[in-house]
Length: 74
Image (tube, rainbow, N blue to C red; front, side):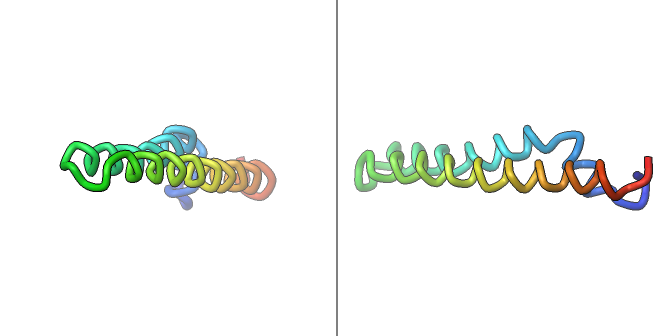
């Protein structure tokens, strides 16, 4: 798929992309806990946001894979 480099990137590395995007809010919450903010609220919010983002991005990657399999020439 030389004409669609982003689609190729998502098809080949989409699982890692979804996992990394999901870990970022958890790390941000942990960072705010270390700074001494409002306690564990930030970590819990980061975990919830990470779970939601994982589901959203994982479904997006799966849709791109389905579209690439069905519509793009091989």
